[in-house]
Image 1 (cartoon, rainbow over the protein chains, first blue to last red):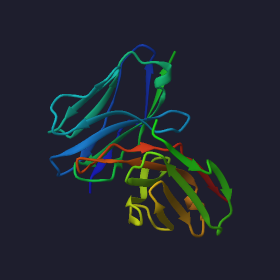
Image 2: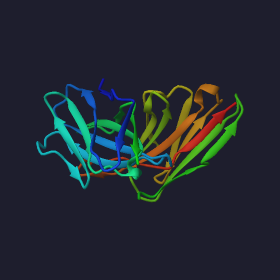
Image 3: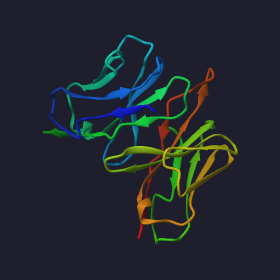
Image 4: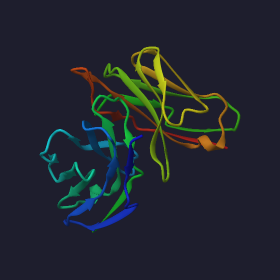
Length: 114
Length: 115
């Protein structure tokens, strides 16, 4: 079974600085998708970014980018120019390319210091 | 935002009572999912549906049942609620394009407390 590991339960960053959240996964598949979801205090789950494993180029969405290392099975999220609104729980998730279910990590709580 | 609503948003119930949570979508998506979120566990899949009347179990399905009689509605039932089912429940939906399941989008969640 696939597993997703987020080894940092909590992280903190100064406003306007950059922070990287780590995620590793275990799979025997060669084709899959990886996701980062954000959960602010409102509890709404919001898709931040998505990466297809067959694409070598790292996905980017404005201030959010990923470092996808397929051989190392690593999928980290970099947040640049951190803002107070970035404070949230962040979840990494995995899905097989032909699958229909997500496997989530346990989350990393990010605090942003003003 | 994906058109997903959950009802109720908050519920307090007693051990042994039946509870039904409703997920409603306006996106006409084929797939619907129920997750529970607990501290230290992230989100875990309870049940999911890949079409009307087509459902399957997730990793934590014991004590839960589901039904989907219409594309837009997916019901989660706790037949006899227990304190271990105190949790936040999320519904999610995803469409299909080119034969591939698309990204999941989530509802606002339901906070359930079983006393």
